[in-house]
Length: 148
Image 1 (cartoon, one colour):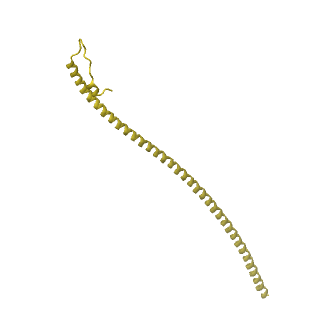
Image 2 (cartoon, rainbow, N blue to C red):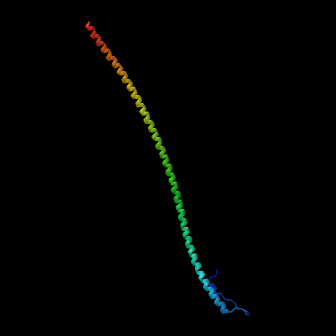
Image 3 (cartoon, rainbow, N blue to C red):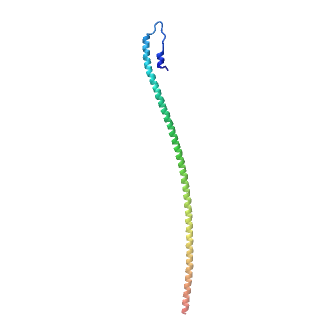
């Protein structure tokens, strides 16, 4: 790309016949150089702005990548926590079921023991009743025999 200095330093060979008016060419070159210098400066400023914007885009792209990685890590951690919670819930459920089964078996044994105890007490009561009845009958017989 030409610079304003390149335009300013350009020297044209003089034509021997039918050349352009040197003053008109130099005036036009001054005008072209002035406009070109403005465009050249604006172009350099725009390149600086483009570079600044590119730096910003790069910065935000790296932030986005970091955020994406953070979200991915958070999802992985959430999945891990969820899996661990499910395992703990299953363990608690299994433990509770075993505990409930054990308690039920204990209660059933206590009921059977209580039923056996009741049956034993009933038998003892029958035996006691028979003994008392026998004793009373014997006493009645003694009473009845003495009257005679």
